[in-house]
Length: 213
Image (tube, rainbow, N blue to C red; front, side, top):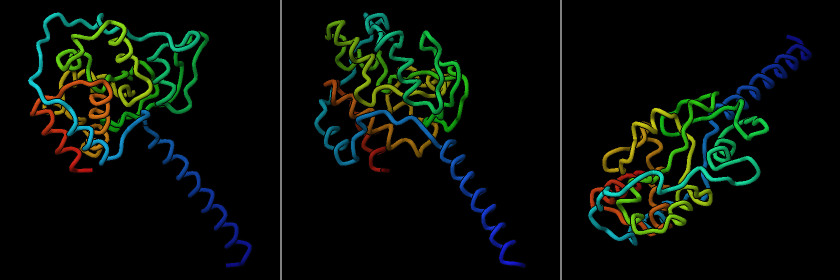
């Protein structure tokens, strides 16, 4: 084979490899909320949490955690997370996502319609209520429900989020076990940041998940 042909084939191979890497990166792009702690920090924060039996759900209502509030202009918290966690997200004049790509780290699915994606409260609102938020002011509950500064909000597959409901890690974990470590870090940080309690089964589950990091 001539040097010219070998060079041409090498160039084509290099281009194909580069394209594959780009596509691979696009396909693996996933939500990365801010403030996810290191494993060591998460373990320290978990140890610092108050262990207490869960309180009652009596009086709970999602309306007591006002969301999704306006962030800027026409954009609310949900729309902000969709833009943050998606790839190539295009929005209209009302800030609604009209196209984009979302990878759900809970189950490994990728979606191209925003309607297939929910914004999960990592620590569910009802769980927060039973863990101390029942005594908060409405303003504090609103801040918690729209927390963009920590790892409390993440874009995931809608039916996976619905299957989770208000369950803690002792009763529900993401379908992808490879994400348990990150999920436990996010859960622990949110509980620590907001001064919420954990029950003993929940703490044991978190310790086990962090132990696998």
